[in-house]
Amino acid sequence: MIIDSHCHAWQHWPYLPAVPDPETRGSAEMLIDQMDLNGVDAATIVSAQIFQNFDNNDYVASAVRRYPTRLNQFADVDSFWSETYHVSGAASRLADAMRRWPMKGFTHYIAGEDDASWFESPDGQDFFRVASENRMIASIACGPQHQPMIRRVAERFPELSILCHHMSGLRAYGDGVEANIRQVTESAQLPNIHLKLSGFHYMSEPDRSWDFPFIDVMWIYEEVYRAFGSRMVWGSDYPVVTSAMTHRHALEAFRTYCTFVSDGDREAILGTTLAGLLQRARSVEV
Image 1: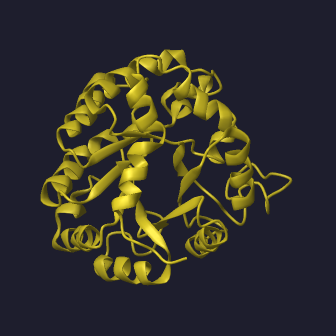
Image 2: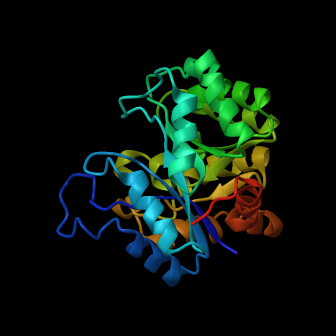
């Protein structure tokens, strides 16, 4: 079983430079096609209501209804590009989102310059309380600097499953690489914090983001794997990943080239860990 923990689908291609096929480049049908070609059984679509796609939650919900056995939705709730980012009423907006969309979880993108202290505020605590009580999966886009606040959420709400995008934003270059790794691996002490094993091209130097199979960053994946083990979940980041590699490359960067992973953990990271989280998450009607 292979389940992609992190992909997107948009009605209009949201990025520059412009592409000749903006209406289909990021479509749910293109995602399904890649899944079929590469033997991926199911996927969780991380909604992102950006640029020409401010109704992306609706679009992804419609895709889930078209492909109910293949796709799951993590709806975009109050991410940093929204007008409602960290303003009062977040818990009510999350409850409303659950009524509107067949979401197994939500995604929330934290602004890079934000210290995530809102998570500790009364409004933030109410938000995560609603998520926990309703068996939501929290899919969080964060950096290593946000891990202390994420740990506090995990401690306060031990039943809440948390997935941190793309190795929690670790990079193999720049200042503080080792300190950032320690910040992320410390979170492995909390059993409800998981990492998405994805984003190989993000971790590499920007001018080497094409350098499959990303041997230069594997040491970080190995070090973090030693801490988290099977509490990692593979993700492709399709279709955004196509600026650096194909959907198949995103799969094989882990499956073939992460040779330090045990056979049992490889199976878990490819699908069974996420399958368990989805099974325990809230039931949805499609």
